[in-house]
Length: 492
Image 1 (tube, helix red, strand yellow):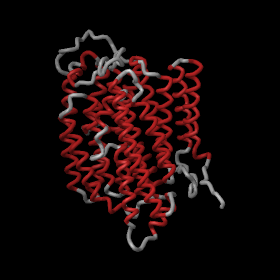
Image 2: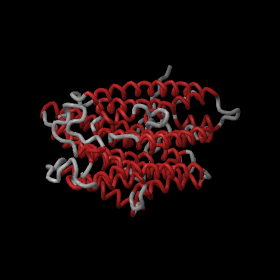
Image 3: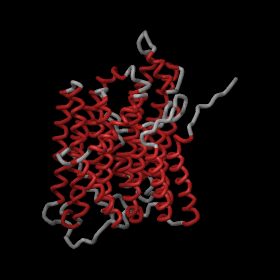
Image 4: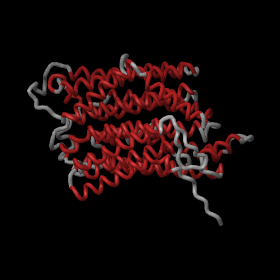
């Protein structure tokens, strides 16, 4: 029996190989130097090199009919986005790691391994590669969530995340098995041609397999009703990792779902419109209503992220080019907004915050009273993030929601767009409530409070804040990049 192996175009995997090599190199640096700052520098250098190599692939397409990985405008767009997310995560983690005594020698390389999982996931061209990439991402995130080993809420969050992640992986793997049984292949390109030739309808086995896969992927993006793990995990995880989990990890899975329903499952995508309509409404409504009741800022943002998954689904069900453009555009915007918001929270962490559940961290809403007077830089940037998440004009969030809801209206889903707008109005209450609290008259915290957060971290946050405003005023370059990525995906 002749055994054949799928082809792997080495040129297509150079950015991923760079990230993998520097992650391993960072572990070796930690062994010999015992310096977390050296490990941090190694990881940051590796990400810069990978970013430059990814930008060199911009506008190129490498043939991959029989390959495990794809290289096109779609893959390159997300590779650049994931690398930038990782770089920002490392930057906002520097002072946090030192203040909470997290083991930076393991923490920073794990961020790179998680990034590698995201990059491989979005470029996967068969079901096996997809599953392995998702597991690499998930296992890295499990360890990062539990990296504060002397903090019981971090350990509890990691255990909950592992258990729910194991269930999700089980559903996903069972779904993959059924899809393989129905089509006889794991290759996306072959699967699309097989499904395109069906004349007697979609086999029940395939429908069940896709449904199980969506259950598994729904867990990963915290889509209602598979969202139960998110609030506890977001609260217990180190704050910069909460930002990575809510942006990079979630966006990678959304990008995978978009590829699945644009290529191998395009013949059955119309059958999912009604189901996704309901899931979008449930995610938006439950996320925003639950966020109204939260006193913990990280839990509030966790439920907010569930609502934002609902917003993405609004454009997803349109099955149109404009809808896909809206998803990519909003993913990029949400990455900047989410990282900046959690970066501000992380920058307010004081030394010694690893000994008890909340010592050293400002997690309760009341802890943000008068923050505008005591920590004006973080308060101003966090305010910009909150306004953008709410969709206020002249911010990136407004442009993103305009594209999302506009795609729904153009596709005839006017009622869904109205529900989305009403949900955005509900979110104004808790976003602006926290913002107004920060600029209330000085109360618990005196104006003489000592500064927190490193100068480097504040500079990164300042850049993110300016980026949110800049994208809200002039998003044209990013829109052009998004259009190119969607064109590459549609051309498959």
